[in-house]
Image 1: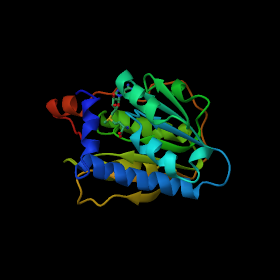
Image 2: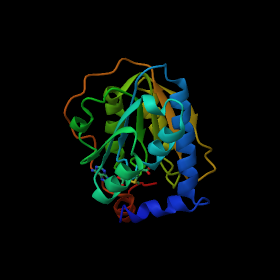
Image 3: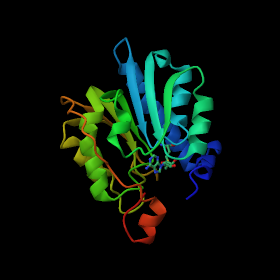
Image 4: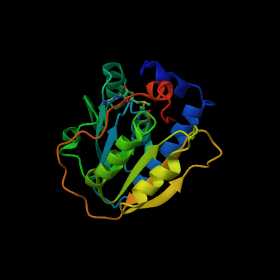
Length: 215
Ligand SMILES: C[S@@+](CC[C@H](N)C(=O)[O-])C[C@H]1O[C@@H](n2cnc3c(N)ncnc32)[C@H](O)[C@@H]1O
């Protein structure tokens, strides 16, 4: 998978990916609308080109209040994000997003983006990552995440993993559409952030070829 090329579907407004982007951005706007006045922290895991968050920050009334860190491995994507984020308080790190150490100084954050992650890692790693969200997210902070509806549809299971851990469901996309987007609010106290690796980014194509679930 070429993760630069993967983003070109965003430029076709009718594509499933562009529709998913709009759903994610609606949830980001809602999270920023809910945030109390004052500084807001955000982080994005496997941020890609950061289109979801960066585009919203440019036009949301609270955009200037947000201090964000985006972690992405592909330097071509971080270069795109850096250009797009000009004028915003957004740090873009070219590095391994699975490492919790990359979120020090930002976690727990008011807004956590896990978009394009859960379809590319094993189920055990999804559950571990959901568990780690308790250290990445503030009390009343929001996690926005995605997972394709490709069979087997793991989205309900991922919702359960969140909801077993004090996350409250705010919104889940219509099961009839092929992309899946959800937002959960953390109702617990943030756990201390320990240095760990949350997942191995295997890639949906590799998971599919191996007969493992993907989406
Ligand atoms: C499916 S894309 C999602 C990008 C973005 N979050 C979005 O939804 O538009 C997955 C991204 O994860 C990046 N990636 C893969 N392994 C990574 C890792 N270990 N650490 C950080 N980024 C990684 C890829 O380069 C790719 O840009």
